[in-house]
Image (cartoon, rainbow, N blue to C red; front, side, top):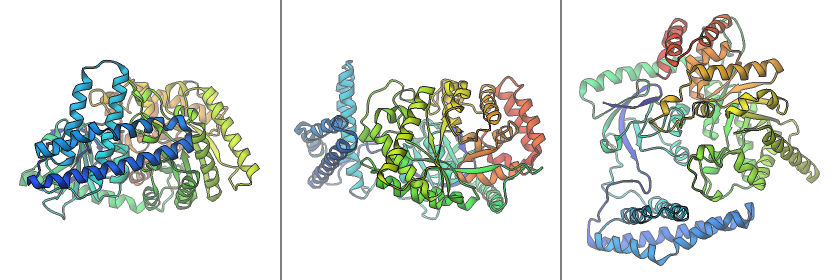
Length: 589
Protein backbone atom coordinates (compact mmCIF):
# COMPACT_ATOMS: atom_id res chain seq x y z
CA UNK A 1 0.00 0.00 0.00
CA UNK A 2 1.24 3.49 -0.90
CA UNK A 3 0.06 6.54 1.02
CA UNK A 4 -0.80 9.91 -0.47
CA UNK A 5 -3.40 12.62 -0.11
CA UNK A 6 -7.00 11.80 -0.97
CA UNK A 7 -8.09 14.62 -3.29
CA UNK A 8 -11.32 13.24 -4.77
CA UNK A 9 -13.41 10.73 -2.80
CA UNK A 10 -14.46 7.25 -3.83
CA UNK A 11 -12.87 3.89 -4.59
CA UNK A 12 -12.00 2.28 -7.91
CA UNK A 13 -10.36 -1.02 -8.82
CA UNK A 14 -8.83 -0.83 -12.29
CA UNK A 15 -5.71 -1.07 -14.41
CA UNK A 16 -2.92 1.50 -14.50
CA UNK A 17 -2.12 3.67 -17.49
CA UNK A 18 1.15 5.59 -17.11
CA UNK A 19 1.19 9.16 -18.42
CA UNK A 20 4.72 9.96 -19.52
CA UNK A 21 5.78 13.51 -20.25
CA UNK A 22 7.42 13.91 -23.65
CA UNK A 23 10.79 14.46 -21.99
CA UNK A 24 10.33 12.83 -18.63
CA UNK A 25 12.79 10.61 -16.79
CA UNK A 26 11.67 7.48 -18.63
CA UNK A 27 13.94 4.48 -19.11
CA UNK A 28 15.84 4.70 -22.41
CA UNK A 29 14.35 2.64 -25.24
CA UNK A 30 16.55 0.92 -27.79
CA UNK A 31 15.96 0.07 -31.41
CA UNK A 32 14.96 -3.48 -32.17
CA UNK A 33 17.27 -3.61 -35.22
CA UNK A 34 20.24 -1.46 -36.30
CA UNK A 35 18.59 -0.77 -39.67
CA UNK A 36 15.73 1.03 -37.83
CA UNK A 37 18.04 4.00 -37.14
CA UNK A 38 17.24 5.57 -40.52
CA UNK A 39 13.50 5.56 -39.83
CA UNK A 40 14.04 7.09 -36.37
CA UNK A 41 16.19 9.88 -37.81
CA UNK A 42 13.54 10.55 -40.46
CA UNK A 43 10.83 10.69 -37.78
CA UNK A 44 12.96 13.11 -35.75
CA UNK A 45 13.58 15.33 -38.79
CA UNK A 46 9.84 15.44 -39.54
CA UNK A 47 9.14 16.49 -35.95
CA UNK A 48 11.73 19.27 -36.27
CA UNK A 49 10.10 20.50 -39.50
CA UNK A 50 6.65 20.48 -37.88
CA UNK A 51 7.98 22.34 -34.83
CA UNK A 52 9.64 24.93 -37.10
CA UNK A 53 6.39 25.47 -38.99
CA UNK A 54 4.54 25.87 -35.71
CA UNK A 55 7.06 28.45 -34.47
CA UNK A 56 6.90 30.42 -37.72
CA UNK A 57 3.12 30.56 -37.42
CA UNK A 58 3.44 31.66 -33.79
CA UNK A 59 5.82 34.45 -34.73
CA UNK A 60 3.38 35.83 -37.31
CA UNK A 61 0.29 35.49 -35.10
CA UNK A 62 1.84 36.84 -31.89
CA UNK A 63 3.41 39.80 -33.69
CA UNK A 64 0.01 40.62 -35.15
CA UNK A 65 -1.97 40.14 -31.91
CA UNK A 66 0.49 41.33 -29.25
CA UNK A 67 3.17 43.26 -31.11
CA UNK A 68 6.66 42.42 -32.51
CA UNK A 69 8.41 42.48 -29.13
CA UNK A 70 6.17 39.70 -27.80
CA UNK A 71 7.26 37.49 -30.72
CA UNK A 72 10.99 37.84 -30.02
CA UNK A 73 11.03 34.80 -27.73
CA UNK A 74 9.88 32.61 -30.62
CA UNK A 75 12.50 34.06 -32.95
CA UNK A 76 15.04 32.84 -30.39
CA UNK A 77 13.40 29.43 -30.22
CA UNK A 78 13.44 29.13 -34.01
CA UNK A 79 17.18 29.90 -34.04
CA UNK A 80 17.78 27.18 -31.43
CA UNK A 81 15.65 24.74 -33.41
CA UNK A 82 17.68 25.37 -36.56
CA UNK A 83 21.03 24.94 -34.79
CA UNK A 84 22.94 22.23 -36.72
CA UNK A 85 24.71 21.21 -33.50
CA UNK A 86 21.46 20.21 -31.79
CA UNK A 87 20.26 18.21 -34.77
CA UNK A 88 23.56 16.41 -35.33
CA UNK A 89 23.80 15.46 -31.66
CA UNK A 90 20.43 13.70 -31.79
CA UNK A 91 21.31 11.98 -35.09
CA UNK A 92 24.57 10.72 -33.60
CA UNK A 93 22.94 9.34 -30.46
CA UNK A 94 20.34 7.47 -32.53
CA UNK A 95 23.01 5.92 -34.79
CA UNK A 96 25.77 5.24 -32.27
CA UNK A 97 23.73 4.21 -29.22
CA UNK A 98 20.80 2.66 -31.11
CA UNK A 99 18.24 4.68 -29.14
CA UNK A 100 14.77 5.68 -30.34
CA UNK A 101 14.41 9.29 -31.43
CA UNK A 102 12.56 10.28 -28.24
CA UNK A 103 15.12 8.62 -25.97
CA UNK A 104 17.94 10.25 -27.94
CA UNK A 105 16.25 13.62 -27.53
CA UNK A 106 15.93 13.00 -23.78
CA UNK A 107 19.61 12.11 -23.52
CA UNK A 108 20.70 15.21 -25.42
CA UNK A 109 18.55 17.36 -23.16
CA UNK A 110 20.05 15.80 -20.05
CA UNK A 111 23.50 16.54 -21.45
CA UNK A 112 22.65 20.20 -21.86
CA UNK A 113 21.23 20.31 -18.33
CA UNK A 114 24.52 18.93 -16.95
CA UNK A 115 26.52 21.52 -18.89
CA UNK A 116 24.36 24.46 -17.81
CA UNK A 117 24.24 23.30 -14.18
CA UNK A 118 27.85 24.42 -13.79
CA UNK A 119 27.02 27.99 -14.87
CA UNK A 120 25.47 30.31 -12.30
CA UNK A 121 24.65 33.37 -14.42
CA UNK A 122 20.95 34.12 -14.78
CA UNK A 123 21.35 34.71 -18.55
CA UNK A 124 22.42 31.11 -19.14
CA UNK A 125 19.65 29.78 -16.92
CA UNK A 126 17.17 31.59 -19.19
CA UNK A 127 18.84 30.06 -22.26
CA UNK A 128 18.45 26.60 -20.73
CA UNK A 129 14.74 27.28 -20.26
CA UNK A 130 14.51 28.31 -23.92
CA UNK A 131 16.35 25.15 -24.94
CA UNK A 132 14.06 23.02 -22.79
CA UNK A 133 11.02 24.60 -24.45
CA UNK A 134 12.38 23.91 -27.94
CA UNK A 135 13.26 20.30 -27.17
CA UNK A 136 9.86 19.75 -25.51
CA UNK A 137 8.21 21.16 -28.63
CA UNK A 138 10.11 18.69 -30.82
CA UNK A 139 9.23 15.89 -28.40
CA UNK A 140 5.53 16.71 -28.50
CA UNK A 141 5.54 16.54 -32.31
CA UNK A 142 7.56 13.34 -32.20
CA UNK A 143 5.14 11.60 -29.83
CA UNK A 144 2.08 13.06 -31.52
CA UNK A 145 3.04 12.08 -35.05
CA UNK A 146 3.06 8.30 -34.59
CA UNK A 147 1.64 5.49 -32.50
CA UNK A 148 3.45 4.43 -29.31
CA UNK A 149 6.37 2.15 -30.02
CA UNK A 150 6.06 -1.55 -29.27
CA UNK A 151 7.02 -2.40 -25.74
CA UNK A 152 6.08 1.00 -24.30
CA UNK A 153 3.46 -0.65 -22.11
CA UNK A 154 0.45 1.42 -23.11
CA UNK A 155 -1.91 -1.51 -23.55
CA UNK A 156 -3.89 -2.70 -20.53
CA UNK A 157 -4.15 -6.34 -19.57
CA UNK A 158 -7.93 -6.22 -19.47
CA UNK A 159 -9.68 -3.85 -21.83
CA UNK A 160 -12.91 -4.11 -19.82
CA UNK A 161 -11.41 -2.82 -16.58
CA UNK A 162 -11.58 0.85 -15.53
CA UNK A 163 -8.48 2.88 -16.45
CA UNK A 164 -6.50 4.61 -13.70
CA UNK A 165 -4.10 7.34 -14.84
CA UNK A 166 -0.76 7.29 -13.04
CA UNK A 167 1.56 10.27 -13.59
CA UNK A 168 4.28 12.32 -11.95
CA UNK A 169 1.94 15.29 -12.32
CA UNK A 170 -0.84 16.37 -14.65
CA UNK A 171 -0.33 19.74 -16.29
CA UNK A 172 -3.23 22.04 -17.20
CA UNK A 173 -2.78 21.38 -20.92
CA UNK A 174 -2.80 17.62 -20.28
CA UNK A 175 -5.87 17.91 -18.10
CA UNK A 176 -7.81 19.27 -21.06
CA UNK A 177 -6.83 16.46 -23.45
CA UNK A 178 -7.28 13.79 -20.77
CA UNK A 179 -10.76 15.12 -20.07
CA UNK A 180 -12.04 13.19 -23.10
CA UNK A 181 -10.59 9.82 -22.04
CA UNK A 182 -12.67 7.18 -20.20
CA UNK A 183 -10.79 7.61 -16.92
CA UNK A 184 -12.00 6.00 -13.69
CA UNK A 185 -9.26 7.16 -11.29
CA UNK A 186 -6.11 9.31 -11.05
CA UNK A 187 -2.87 8.91 -9.08
CA UNK A 188 -0.02 11.46 -9.12
CA UNK A 189 3.32 11.79 -7.39
CA UNK A 190 2.96 15.52 -6.76
CA UNK A 191 0.05 17.87 -6.18
CA UNK A 192 -2.49 18.55 -3.49
CA UNK A 193 -6.22 18.94 -3.09
CA UNK A 194 -6.40 21.85 -5.56
CA UNK A 195 -3.94 20.56 -8.17
CA UNK A 196 -5.10 20.16 -11.77
CA UNK A 197 -5.28 16.40 -11.31
CA UNK A 198 -7.59 16.93 -8.33
CA UNK A 199 -9.79 19.43 -10.15
CA UNK A 200 -10.02 17.14 -13.19
CA UNK A 201 -10.96 14.19 -10.95
CA UNK A 202 -13.60 16.07 -8.99
CA UNK A 203 -15.14 17.57 -12.12
CA UNK A 204 -15.72 14.01 -13.32
CA UNK A 205 -16.60 12.55 -9.93
CA UNK A 206 -13.79 9.98 -9.96
CA UNK A 207 -11.46 8.90 -7.12
CA UNK A 208 -7.98 10.43 -7.02
CA UNK A 209 -4.90 10.39 -4.79
CA UNK A 210 -2.00 12.86 -5.10
CA UNK A 211 1.37 13.17 -3.40
CA UNK A 212 2.19 9.44 -3.74
CA UNK A 213 5.98 9.65 -3.79
CA UNK A 214 7.76 7.16 -6.04
CA UNK A 215 4.61 5.59 -7.50
CA UNK A 216 6.03 5.88 -11.04
CA UNK A 217 8.89 3.61 -9.98
CA UNK A 218 6.64 0.74 -8.95
CA UNK A 219 3.73 0.72 -11.38
CA UNK A 220 3.62 -0.27 -15.05
CA UNK A 221 0.81 0.28 -17.53
CA UNK A 222 -1.59 -2.64 -17.23
CA UNK A 223 -0.90 -3.33 -13.55
CA UNK A 224 -4.02 -3.91 -11.43
CA UNK A 225 -4.39 -1.00 -9.01
CA UNK A 226 -6.75 0.15 -6.26
CA UNK A 227 -7.35 3.87 -5.66
CA UNK A 228 -9.01 4.94 -2.41
CA UNK A 229 -9.59 8.65 -2.84
CA UNK A 230 -10.94 9.24 0.64
CA UNK A 231 -8.25 7.55 2.72
CA UNK A 232 -5.47 8.49 0.26
CA UNK A 233 -4.37 4.86 -0.32
CA UNK A 234 -3.09 3.26 -3.52
CA UNK A 235 -2.50 -0.49 -3.79
CA UNK A 236 -0.49 -1.77 -6.74
CA UNK A 237 -1.12 -5.40 -7.77
CA UNK A 238 -3.62 -6.14 -4.94
CA UNK A 239 -4.21 -9.75 -3.89
CA UNK A 240 -7.58 -11.48 -4.34
CA UNK A 241 -8.81 -10.60 -0.85
CA UNK A 242 -7.95 -6.89 -1.25
CA UNK A 243 -9.52 -6.80 -4.70
CA UNK A 244 -12.78 -8.32 -3.44
CA UNK A 245 -12.91 -5.95 -0.45
CA UNK A 246 -12.41 -2.79 -2.52
CA UNK A 247 -14.77 -3.89 -5.29
CA UNK A 248 -17.53 -4.07 -2.67
CA UNK A 249 -16.77 -0.53 -1.48
CA UNK A 250 -16.65 0.63 -5.10
CA UNK A 251 -20.14 -0.74 -5.75
CA UNK A 252 -21.51 0.96 -2.62
CA UNK A 253 -19.90 4.28 -3.60
CA UNK A 254 -21.41 4.31 -7.07
CA UNK A 255 -24.80 3.20 -5.78
CA UNK A 256 -24.81 6.19 -3.40
CA UNK A 257 -23.86 8.62 -6.17
CA UNK A 258 -26.56 7.24 -8.47
CA UNK A 259 -29.19 7.61 -5.76
CA UNK A 260 -28.23 11.24 -5.08
CA UNK A 261 -28.56 12.35 -8.69
CA UNK A 262 -32.29 11.59 -8.51
CA UNK A 263 -32.72 15.06 -6.93
CA UNK A 264 -31.51 16.90 -10.06
CA UNK A 265 -34.89 18.54 -10.82
CA UNK A 266 -35.64 19.54 -7.23
CA UNK A 267 -34.90 23.13 -6.10
CA UNK A 268 -31.97 23.48 -3.72
CA UNK A 269 -33.20 24.53 -0.29
CA UNK A 270 -32.55 23.82 3.37
CA UNK A 271 -34.86 21.67 5.50
CA UNK A 272 -36.73 24.82 6.59
CA UNK A 273 -37.02 26.19 3.05
CA UNK A 274 -34.10 28.63 2.68
CA UNK A 275 -33.23 28.75 -1.03
CA UNK A 276 -29.65 28.40 -2.27
CA UNK A 277 -28.11 28.49 -5.73
CA UNK A 278 -25.89 25.59 -6.74
CA UNK A 279 -23.76 26.52 -9.74
CA UNK A 280 -21.09 24.66 -11.69
CA UNK A 281 -17.38 25.30 -12.23
CA UNK A 282 -16.50 24.39 -15.80
CA UNK A 283 -13.49 24.28 -18.12
CA UNK A 284 -15.13 23.43 -21.45
CA UNK A 285 -18.34 22.52 -23.27
CA UNK A 286 -18.28 18.93 -22.01
CA UNK A 287 -18.45 20.26 -18.44
CA UNK A 288 -21.45 22.41 -19.37
CA UNK A 289 -23.38 19.30 -20.36
CA UNK A 290 -22.40 17.67 -17.06
CA UNK A 291 -23.70 20.72 -15.20
CA UNK A 292 -27.10 20.36 -16.86
CA UNK A 293 -27.21 16.63 -16.11
CA UNK A 294 -26.77 17.09 -12.34
CA UNK A 295 -29.20 19.97 -11.95
CA UNK A 296 -26.98 23.07 -11.69
CA UNK A 297 -28.89 26.35 -12.02
CA UNK A 298 -26.10 27.99 -14.00
CA UNK A 299 -22.35 28.23 -14.51
CA UNK A 300 -20.71 30.02 -11.59
CA UNK A 301 -17.18 29.88 -12.99
CA UNK A 302 -16.04 29.30 -16.56
CA UNK A 303 -12.22 29.10 -16.60
CA UNK A 304 -11.37 30.59 -20.01
CA UNK A 305 -7.64 29.86 -19.76
CA UNK A 306 -8.24 26.25 -20.79
CA UNK A 307 -9.35 27.48 -24.22
CA UNK A 308 -5.98 29.24 -24.52
CA UNK A 309 -4.03 26.25 -23.19
CA UNK A 310 -5.32 24.07 -26.01
CA UNK A 311 -4.47 26.59 -28.76
CA UNK A 312 -1.03 26.82 -30.33
CA UNK A 313 -1.76 30.47 -31.16
CA UNK A 314 -3.63 33.32 -29.52
CA UNK A 315 -7.36 32.64 -30.05
CA UNK A 316 -8.83 35.46 -32.13
CA UNK A 317 -11.79 37.56 -31.02
CA UNK A 318 -14.08 35.59 -33.34
CA UNK A 319 -12.83 32.23 -32.05
CA UNK A 320 -13.36 33.35 -28.47
CA UNK A 321 -16.77 34.86 -29.19
CA UNK A 322 -18.05 31.69 -30.87
CA UNK A 323 -16.78 29.50 -28.04
CA UNK A 324 -18.20 31.71 -25.27
CA UNK A 325 -21.49 31.93 -27.18
CA UNK A 326 -21.75 28.12 -27.17
CA UNK A 327 -20.92 28.02 -23.46
CA UNK A 328 -23.69 30.51 -22.70
CA UNK A 329 -26.30 28.88 -24.95
CA UNK A 330 -25.66 25.46 -23.39
CA UNK A 331 -25.38 26.61 -19.76
CA UNK A 332 -28.30 25.84 -17.46
CA UNK A 333 -30.77 28.74 -17.74
CA UNK A 334 -28.25 30.29 -20.17
CA UNK A 335 -26.54 31.78 -17.12
CA UNK A 336 -22.74 31.93 -16.95
CA UNK A 337 -20.00 33.79 -15.11
CA UNK A 338 -17.00 33.98 -17.42
CA UNK A 339 -13.62 34.51 -15.75
CA UNK A 340 -11.00 36.36 -17.75
CA UNK A 341 -7.60 34.78 -18.32
CA UNK A 342 -6.00 33.33 -15.20
CA UNK A 343 -2.65 32.32 -16.66
CA UNK A 344 0.71 32.14 -14.92
CA UNK A 345 1.90 30.03 -12.03
CA UNK A 346 1.57 26.49 -13.39
CA UNK A 347 -0.66 27.51 -16.32
CA UNK A 348 1.52 28.90 -19.10
CA UNK A 349 1.08 29.27 -22.83
CA UNK A 350 4.03 29.44 -25.21
CA UNK A 351 2.82 32.49 -27.12
CA UNK A 352 3.16 34.71 -24.03
CA UNK A 353 6.73 33.57 -23.60
CA UNK A 354 8.23 32.05 -20.49
CA UNK A 355 10.35 33.77 -17.92
CA UNK A 356 12.22 32.36 -14.96
CA UNK A 357 10.55 33.32 -11.69
CA UNK A 358 11.67 32.08 -8.27
CA UNK A 359 8.02 32.01 -7.14
CA UNK A 360 5.68 32.05 -10.16
CA UNK A 361 2.49 31.81 -8.07
CA UNK A 362 3.31 35.21 -6.60
CA UNK A 363 4.75 36.57 -9.80
CA UNK A 364 3.64 37.62 -13.28
CA UNK A 365 0.25 35.99 -13.55
CA UNK A 366 -3.45 36.50 -14.08
CA UNK A 367 -4.63 40.15 -14.09
CA UNK A 368 -0.97 41.27 -14.03
CA UNK A 369 -0.35 39.61 -17.40
CA UNK A 370 -3.62 41.05 -18.67
CA UNK A 371 -2.77 44.63 -17.75
CA UNK A 372 0.64 44.34 -19.42
CA UNK A 373 -0.98 43.02 -22.61
CA UNK A 374 -3.90 45.42 -23.17
CA UNK A 375 -4.62 44.14 -26.68
CA UNK A 376 -5.01 40.59 -25.35
CA UNK A 377 -7.23 41.91 -22.58
CA UNK A 378 -9.47 44.02 -24.82
CA UNK A 379 -9.88 41.14 -27.29
CA UNK A 380 -11.22 38.86 -24.57
CA UNK A 381 -13.46 41.51 -23.02
CA UNK A 382 -14.96 42.25 -26.46
CA UNK A 383 -15.66 38.55 -27.02
CA UNK A 384 -17.34 38.19 -23.60
CA UNK A 385 -19.49 41.30 -24.05
CA UNK A 386 -20.61 40.06 -27.46
CA UNK A 387 -21.44 36.59 -26.07
CA UNK A 388 -23.52 38.32 -23.41
CA UNK A 389 -26.26 38.85 -26.04
CA UNK A 390 -27.12 35.14 -25.78
CA UNK A 391 -27.93 34.83 -22.08
CA UNK A 392 -27.32 36.18 -18.60
CA UNK A 393 -23.56 36.71 -18.56
CA UNK A 394 -21.23 38.10 -15.90
CA UNK A 395 -17.52 38.84 -16.31
CA UNK A 396 -15.13 37.99 -13.46
CA UNK A 397 -11.61 39.36 -12.95
CA UNK A 398 -9.16 37.15 -11.00
CA UNK A 399 -6.17 37.97 -8.80
CA UNK A 400 -7.17 41.55 -8.01
CA UNK A 401 -4.86 42.78 -5.25
CA UNK A 402 -5.46 46.53 -5.09
CA UNK A 403 -8.20 49.07 -5.69
CA UNK A 404 -5.97 50.72 -8.30
CA UNK A 405 -5.94 47.52 -10.37
CA UNK A 406 -9.71 47.25 -10.19
CA UNK A 407 -10.21 50.85 -11.30
CA UNK A 408 -7.90 50.30 -14.28
CA UNK A 409 -9.82 47.18 -15.26
CA UNK A 410 -13.19 48.94 -14.94
CA UNK A 411 -11.94 51.80 -17.11
CA UNK A 412 -10.83 49.36 -19.83
CA UNK A 413 -14.21 47.58 -19.73
CA UNK A 414 -16.06 50.87 -20.15
CA UNK A 415 -13.80 51.95 -23.02
CA UNK A 416 -14.38 48.58 -24.69
CA UNK A 417 -18.16 48.97 -24.36
CA UNK A 418 -17.91 52.46 -25.90
CA UNK A 419 -15.84 51.17 -28.83
CA UNK A 420 -18.26 48.31 -29.56
CA UNK A 421 -21.15 50.75 -29.52
CA UNK A 422 -19.34 53.18 -31.82
CA UNK A 423 -18.48 50.34 -34.24
CA UNK A 424 -22.07 49.13 -34.28
CA UNK A 425 -21.06 45.64 -33.05
CA UNK A 426 -23.89 43.90 -31.14
CA UNK A 427 -23.05 43.39 -27.47
CA UNK A 428 -24.81 43.11 -24.11
CA UNK A 429 -24.77 46.30 -22.09
CA UNK A 430 -26.03 44.52 -18.97
CA UNK A 431 -23.00 42.24 -18.42
CA UNK A 432 -22.08 42.60 -14.73
CA UNK A 433 -18.42 42.77 -13.71
CA UNK A 434 -17.05 41.16 -10.58
CA UNK A 435 -13.91 40.58 -8.55
CA UNK A 436 -12.50 37.22 -7.56
CA UNK A 437 -11.33 37.60 -3.97
CA UNK A 438 -8.37 35.27 -3.66
CA UNK A 439 -5.60 37.59 -2.47
CA UNK A 440 -5.64 38.41 1.27
CA UNK A 441 -5.14 42.13 0.51
CA UNK A 442 -8.46 42.18 -1.38
CA UNK A 443 -10.19 40.36 1.48
CA UNK A 444 -8.89 42.83 4.05
CA UNK A 445 -9.92 45.82 1.91
CA UNK A 446 -13.25 44.26 0.92
CA UNK A 447 -15.30 47.35 1.80
CA UNK A 448 -13.36 49.48 -0.71
CA UNK A 449 -13.54 46.74 -3.35
CA UNK A 450 -17.32 46.46 -2.97
CA UNK A 451 -17.76 50.12 -3.93
CA UNK A 452 -16.22 49.42 -7.36
CA UNK A 453 -17.76 46.10 -8.38
CA UNK A 454 -21.14 44.47 -9.08
CA UNK A 455 -20.47 41.12 -7.43
CA UNK A 456 -17.87 39.03 -5.59
CA UNK A 457 -16.64 35.47 -6.16
CA UNK A 458 -14.45 33.99 -3.46
CA UNK A 459 -11.65 31.85 -4.89
CA UNK A 460 -10.95 29.80 -1.80
CA UNK A 461 -8.24 27.64 -3.43
CA UNK A 462 -5.78 30.50 -3.91
CA UNK A 463 -7.03 32.46 -0.91
CA UNK A 464 -6.09 29.54 1.34
CA UNK A 465 -2.59 29.05 -0.08
CA UNK A 466 -1.81 32.78 0.04
CA UNK A 467 -3.22 33.13 3.53
CA UNK A 468 -1.02 30.34 4.94
CA UNK A 469 1.96 31.05 2.62
CA UNK A 470 2.09 27.47 1.32
CA UNK A 471 2.22 26.08 -2.21
CA UNK A 472 -0.81 23.82 -2.49
CA UNK A 473 0.98 21.61 -5.07
CA UNK A 474 4.11 21.08 -2.94
CA UNK A 475 3.73 17.78 -1.03
CA UNK A 476 6.06 19.07 1.70
CA UNK A 477 3.74 21.92 2.68
CA UNK A 478 0.40 21.11 1.00
CA UNK A 479 -0.96 19.92 4.37
CA UNK A 480 -0.93 23.56 5.50
CA UNK A 481 -3.49 24.43 2.81
CA UNK A 482 -6.23 23.25 5.13
CA UNK A 483 -9.72 24.58 4.35
CA UNK A 484 -11.04 23.59 7.78
CA UNK A 485 -8.86 26.23 9.41
CA UNK A 486 -9.78 28.92 11.98
CA UNK A 487 -8.00 31.58 9.92
CA UNK A 488 -9.82 30.63 6.71
CA UNK A 489 -13.28 30.67 8.29
CA UNK A 490 -12.66 34.03 9.99
CA UNK A 491 -11.56 35.66 6.74
CA UNK A 492 -14.52 34.13 4.90
CA UNK A 493 -16.91 35.42 7.57
CA UNK A 494 -15.46 38.91 7.16
CA UNK A 495 -16.05 38.81 3.38
CA UNK A 496 -19.56 37.37 3.66
CA UNK A 497 -20.58 39.90 6.32
CA UNK A 498 -19.40 42.80 4.14
CA UNK A 499 -21.23 41.48 1.06
CA UNK A 500 -24.46 40.74 2.93
CA UNK A 501 -24.31 44.14 4.65
CA UNK A 502 -24.12 45.95 1.30
CA UNK A 503 -26.43 43.59 -0.61
CA UNK A 504 -23.62 42.57 -2.97
CA UNK A 505 -24.12 39.14 -4.59
CA UNK A 506 -21.38 36.75 -3.40
CA UNK A 507 -20.47 33.24 -4.55
CA UNK A 508 -17.80 30.87 -3.28
CA UNK A 509 -16.34 29.02 -6.26
CA UNK A 510 -13.39 27.20 -4.70
CA UNK A 511 -13.27 23.52 -3.83
CA UNK A 512 -14.66 24.22 -0.35
CA UNK A 513 -18.08 24.77 -1.93
CA UNK A 514 -18.40 21.09 -2.84
CA UNK A 515 -17.07 19.60 0.41
CA UNK A 516 -19.89 18.63 2.80
CA UNK A 517 -18.23 19.73 6.03
CA UNK A 518 -17.22 23.10 4.61
CA UNK A 519 -20.61 23.58 2.95
CA UNK A 520 -22.40 23.19 6.30
CA UNK A 521 -20.38 26.03 7.81
CA UNK A 522 -20.54 28.28 4.74
CA UNK A 523 -24.34 28.01 4.67
CA UNK A 524 -24.46 28.81 8.38
CA UNK A 525 -22.23 31.86 7.78
CA UNK A 526 -24.74 33.28 5.31
CA UNK A 527 -23.49 32.01 1.93
CA UNK A 528 -26.36 31.35 -0.47
CA UNK A 529 -24.50 30.86 -3.78
CA UNK A 530 -22.16 27.86 -4.12
CA UNK A 531 -20.21 27.03 -7.30
CA UNK A 532 -18.45 23.67 -7.55
CA UNK A 533 -17.41 20.78 -9.75
CA UNK A 534 -20.63 19.44 -11.32
CA UNK A 535 -20.18 16.00 -9.76
CA UNK A 536 -20.65 17.45 -6.25
CA UNK A 537 -23.89 19.34 -6.83
CA UNK A 538 -26.20 16.38 -5.95
CA UNK A 539 -24.24 15.80 -2.71
CA UNK A 540 -24.46 19.41 -1.52
CA UNK A 541 -28.14 19.66 -2.52
CA UNK A 542 -28.91 16.54 -0.49
CA UNK A 543 -26.85 17.80 2.47
CA UNK A 544 -28.42 21.26 2.67
CA UNK A 545 -31.84 19.68 2.34
CA UNK A 546 -31.18 17.78 5.56
CA UNK A 547 -30.25 20.77 7.77
CA UNK A 548 -32.20 23.80 8.99
CA UNK A 549 -30.82 27.33 8.71
CA UNK A 550 -30.75 27.66 12.49
CA UNK A 551 -28.79 24.40 12.83
CA UNK A 552 -26.20 25.52 10.29
CA UNK A 553 -25.88 28.91 12.00
CA UNK A 554 -25.18 27.16 15.32
CA UNK A 555 -22.54 25.00 13.62
CA UNK A 556 -20.88 28.06 12.10
CA UNK A 557 -20.96 30.02 15.37
CA UNK A 558 -19.29 27.13 17.20
CA UNK A 559 -16.63 26.65 14.49
CA UNK A 560 -15.65 30.33 14.76
CA UNK A 561 -14.90 29.81 18.47
CA UNK A 562 -12.50 26.89 17.88
CA UNK A 563 -8.74 27.36 17.79
CA UNK A 564 -7.32 24.53 15.66
CA UNK A 565 -8.07 22.71 12.43
CA UNK A 566 -8.17 19.39 14.29
CA UNK A 567 -10.91 20.69 16.60
CA UNK A 568 -12.91 22.00 13.63
CA UNK A 569 -12.52 18.75 11.71
CA UNK A 570 -13.64 16.61 14.65
CA UNK A 571 -16.60 18.87 15.43
CA UNK A 572 -17.82 19.02 11.80
CA UNK A 573 -17.35 15.28 11.29
CA UNK A 574 -19.67 14.67 14.24
CA UNK A 575 -22.22 17.19 12.93
CA UNK A 576 -22.09 15.68 9.43
CA UNK A 577 -22.82 12.21 10.83
CA UNK A 578 -25.81 13.68 12.70
CA UNK A 579 -27.21 15.46 9.65
CA UNK A 580 -26.52 12.81 7.00
CA UNK A 581 -24.22 9.93 7.84
CA UNK A 582 -24.33 8.51 4.29
CA UNK A 583 -22.68 11.65 2.86
CA UNK A 584 -19.56 11.40 5.03
CA UNK A 585 -17.95 9.03 2.53
CA UNK A 586 -18.19 11.75 -0.15
CA UNK A 587 -16.06 14.25 1.78
CA UNK A 588 -12.28 14.47 1.83
CA UNK A 589 -10.51 13.13 4.91
